[in-house]
Image 1 (tube, rainbow, N blue to C red):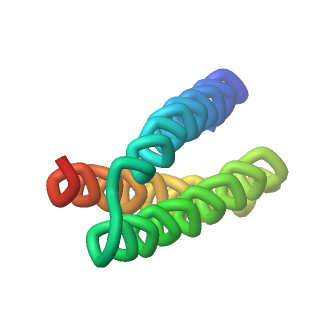
Image 2: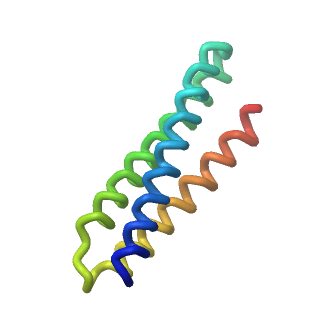
Length: 97
């Protein structure tokens, strides 16, 4: 993989994580509108998203520091984590509109 492709991947992943952070901040503010069981479920799901987000950050760091011999494997793992995070976020949104 070329240096430019690697930099583009890292930049794109960082951008997506930053965007997700902003969207999660909005979700955190919306939790104030809920109460009781709905709020408990919302908090649980939001916590799960935050866990996945932390995993995404770890994967980003792995990608940034991976040597050439491990690059493709680490990239694939990061891509898988990113897709799982996006799917979980969309699932969350579909349940708490």
